[in-house]
Length: 137
Image (cartoon, rainbow, N blue to C red; front, side):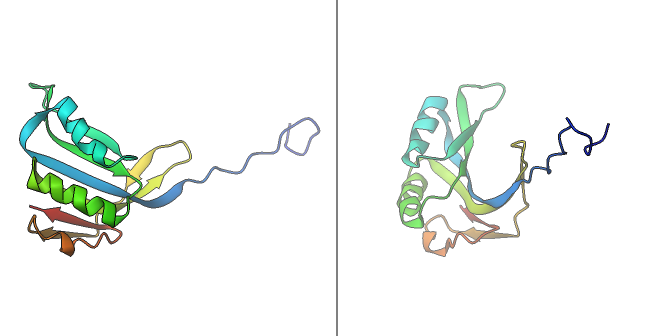
């Protein structure tokens, strides 16, 4: 039986994936925080997905976490990031990272094109250019 015969469905066109850029931020805390406290801290930026990293020997403690999602405007992100760096965050890595998301929902992250190392108080040096990661330490 072929697609030309009556009663058969023609083959559907292949589903295409999506390309784009998302905010990708990694926060390392000066001291590990309890999981609830770490998640409460990042609620200051709604709409982002938080992925806490925990050590197997201390599952309730979070030494760092990753935030991903649609980038908020820089004028909203800057004061939150400044507050975190003045408080519990020792190092922040932030950038617009490229991704390829398949039609099935699998996401592959594109490697960073460039890393920029800045002092933690130099938020004016963060340009949020696509493919660049800014490390504030």
